[in-house]
Amino acid sequence: MAHVVDDKCINCKHTTCVSVCPVDCFYEGENMLVINPDECIDCGVCIPECPEDAIFQTDDEDNKWFKHNSYFSNEGNWPNITEEQAPMENYVDFAKENYKEDKTKLFKAIPAVQID
Ligand code: SF4
Ligand code: SF4
Image (cartoon, rainbow, N blue to C red; front, side):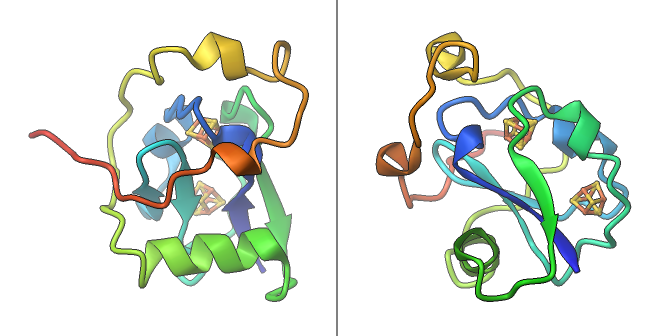
């Protein structure tokens, strides 16, 4: 069992989930976060922190978002993110109240550039 992130995070990246994770298992792409399912301890504290309802629990390793989270937090070379940061600039346009479509087509596979 693990928690994973789906397309509702795309173009939002609030990162409030990151600030509560006790094992720092979030990884950052250019326009979404993923969770490493192997590192997640299934505590569930990130779920109420996500204003987009983008995090869910699953034990289905064939689920497309399970595979997506597993791939980009391992082979995808996305950097670990451990501190909250500002959401994406135009996140309001892509928030659940304003953007009702599946956001998968907006996904970018490139890792985030983190500035210390
Ligand atoms: S709080 Fe939700 S929308 Fe924001 S980065 Fe975390 S998973 Fe993505
Ligand atoms: S369920 Fe717990 S361990 Fe897993 S990503 Fe959320 S906060 Fe982190």
